[in-house]
Length: 317
Image 1 (cartoon, rainbow, N blue to C red):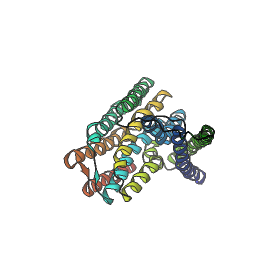
Image 2 (image 1 turned 120 degrees about the horizontal axis):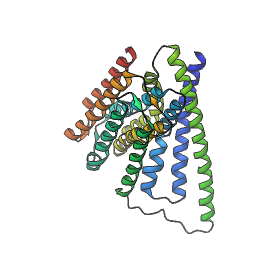
Image 3 (image 1 turned 60 degrees about the vertical axis):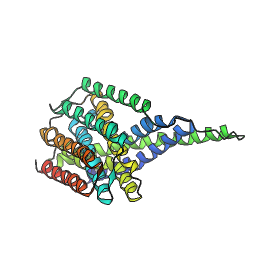
Image 4 (image 1 turned 180 degrees about the vertical axis):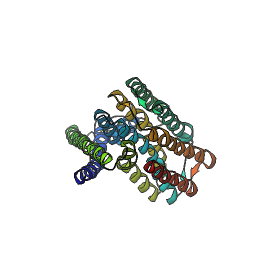
């Protein structure tokens, strides 16, 4: 049991640290290669921040524990909004832009609902995984085409040796991204093995372990980022980060998990109460944004309350 706990904790720490290096390396590599801003934002950073969830859920399916993988997706979606948005809203009001209310937030609700419908029957097939992956591809194309960035490529300085410097930066960031991705894979394997062992030892379902401990660990980068942004007053970064992460979790992570062969989830509490909590959080966050055009302290208290109540009910169930 001690080994399993240490493996889980070491895996989660490695996921957070390696995930940060993977995102930083990949985004700087994209900049060095002069990729367009919309591509960097939608593809590189989107997939980068969802890499821990994707690897954990895929490995859980490969290890014949799809409940752990689905629990990770559902728990991450819940944690992003209940903990991330909830804590940020307690620190200061979080305004929702017109673009977020028209595009980002409704699509986040829709993708969460699509994922919920597919897993509510306690089964995720390869066909359903393929559907989620196809929707993710469509979403990426849509995000890139509707980006409001001016799409100007970074200007070359024209100085002698600038090409060599760019090539050197590209190689350094490529190595950083690859090492970060390797760390994510190793951390995910440790976390999954430790979580499965702890679930068996404590007689808990893999879905609950995935929803609680594993999801909290894979969501820590997003939660920490938005809390730091709220403390510094950069509220414009929060809504897109959290709701965009939920889109990637529902479509990209769910699609990857289904394609490697999720099969029967076999956890009615997760696909019932857990899914219900996820939809309650995303819908309440959306309704609160529509009514007040922002998330305030009352919204934060409600969102945090849902998280605590769901953890208690799933744990006791």
